[in-house]
Image (cartoon, rainbow over all chains, first blue to last red; front, side, top):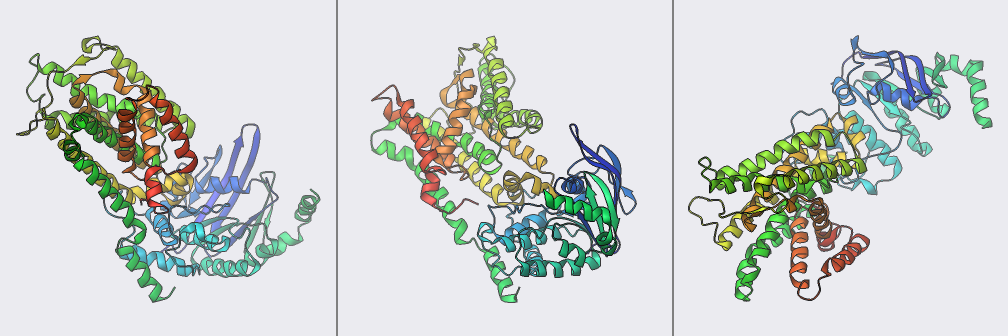
Length: 251
Length: 337
């Protein structure tokens, strides 16, 4: 399925939006077998960094490597084909389609050929794959439900199934647990620890309990630059991080 | 997920669910009504409507192609008449020069019509590459600008009457069929319309169609899935351009008059109105819209010269009350997918 060992490495990536310097020479590594949490206050540049890693944004400088190969100039669809796939902070399944069809759509990404006149959505193998993916993320809603009728928790699960559809080795997850009920957060945490075995996961997350219980490594981003990096224990003890979050809670 | 659920999923995947059958019935009914309209008109002693009915078929064909890129692709083009004009001028110039002894084959529909569609596709490819660098309002403005450029280009063709246009002596030849017979010509156009409608219906249900519909709703997400969406949108744009050009070639045969008026941007607007009235994102709605507008025009013109005013009111009502047009009212919640 996915590469047994995969490593996504960014070195010195920079991004400006006009006069705004959003990410400043960031080094970060995501490797299979580990969950790497990316935390930081709002506006720290987490989502921008994730966009640079996924290929959605081109960096002003710096390089991105996957397993030693330079993929700096590969666009987002190209990186998906190489095994780097992202989720979005805001839920965005395709409203015109059912739950199952959304996963089938996600399966199309890495499936070559346009097949102009062949009816889509009827292939048994792909339907079985879609059902397996929905099972994997624990989504038990009827797959023929229009996606607009799902509740928020189920949509977040669907989003993960759609990311997994391209069989990525590196997952870039932008606040996948935002807005979930405590029970749902628990389910999602179990799923991520299971995925850790053969995926490298970059997890942007605001819930510190989740971060400290789940992550193998934590990077703290502040004003676009790395403030601190280390194990959850080290980060928890870091005075600069504590100051950052105290400062954050004042505002 | 249990095996039972799995089976349920594959069963639904195999057959046409209730969700997708009604739009097909509507499509069949509309084509049936249009196909039998010359006979009905004849029975009612309204044979004089024949020309209007053929125009419904031809403009309906262009509108179906427009609905494909607007309703399913989310590419709101105000340049569709440009391609109708390209088809008209490709066919018209060949027909016009024939009487002056230019090249063999220029009177044959099987040569001229595919050629018109091909020229439309080529120009669609060139303009599409440029226009698809933009999105939303900018895409509308860019296609509108192209439309006007081509309109003024046709206006400047003094050899073909400039802004007056020229009358054409003959229609194209199609094997043993006499296209000069208005009813025969109608059915040739109708057969092509049916092909176009069936073709686009297959397209929107294919992987290709799913991708452009997905990109319409969330282009960024589609690229994050691994699809280079612009390629798909370009192909959709080119296909719509080719069909519009074919409609243009038919139109110039119908009217036997080559004029730049057919490529004016207001014609692009009228085609868009037909799509909206008939039902955005229903394909066959383009035919319904063409029928409603042309029949209204035909009927209303006897009573008032301000018929466009009333069409305008009707359009406002459609947008306010029935977002998805006539087809939307008939189909209710059933989408044509």
